[in-house]
Length: 259
Image 1 (tube, rainbow, N blue to C red):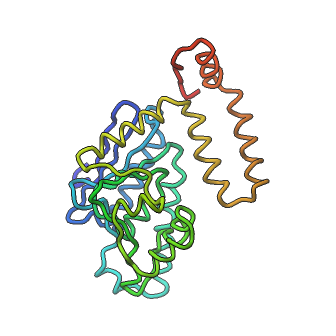
Image 2: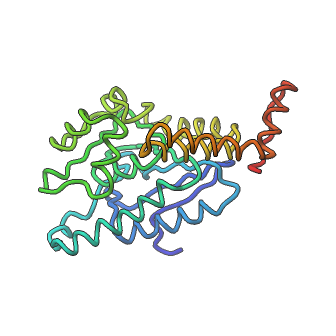
């Protein structure tokens, strides 16, 4: 498609979604719509078992909104804006396949909100992350105030939300915001290695684990255990479960089929 700013590459069973919207990969409505279309394509592709999201180049993973456009917002248009954004993030969070954010540079505002909506985050060692909205007299509107505390706890979350500070990749690792830090030159390879490791497991089990763990965050322990029990019982009726157990007993690698 002419004018595309998001590219999809398939490497074995992993989709690599690269955002290329210079200069800062800002997430405006048009890019968000294109992102949504790509997610729909990925969700329907039975050959894609994991997804990596990253930015093009070395400087930006993704920045937030087009700042001059914020001047036009009033209460009603501001509400409409965040409601539209919420639908997009819901689509990303609910993607069946595990999503790895490969943070290749500055990851600020809406960019960090995208990373938070992913399941696992790997960062290049020069990357910085933050939610600077308070510097503009605003707060994050794409789930940052809710997903950040769930990811790293309320203390550090409120520190970042209220100061607007951007922290280094190493600091982000220390507080649990990212799970791994690697040199930039190794970032894509590290993300692909992680995706390949996930892809070697039972795909239906991986998707169930992602779904149940995510849903359980908003439930009581008893309710979470109930959905875990249900998911476990459904997996017991799959071909992949039989293949996985048989392969273990035969001391060979399983050949999962996502069935």
